[in-house]
Length: 77
Image (cartoon, rainbow, N blue to C red; front, side):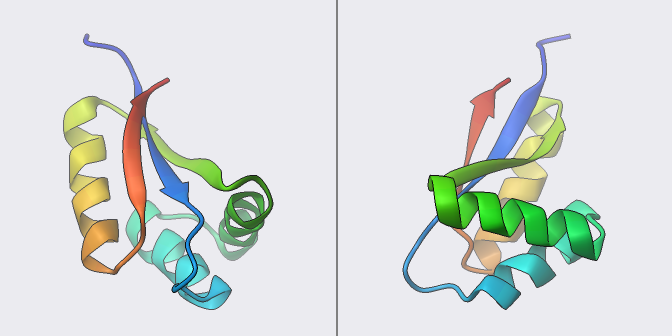
C-alpha cells in the first residue's frame, strides 16, 4: 500500500454552508451531523479532512467535489 491520503476541504468565500453540507453528504457519504461538523471545522479552522482512503479513491472524490465548486486538496495522512 502507498499509504492513506485525505481529501481536505478548504474554506472559501463563495460556497454557502448548506452547499458544503449537501456536497459532503452526497459525495463523501457523510450523515447530516457529520457534514455539519466538517463544514463548521472548515469555517472555523480554514480546512478539514473529510475523506480518507487510497490516493486513487481520494482523486475521484476530489474531482467530484471540485465539479461542485468545492475547494479541495489531497494530503498524505
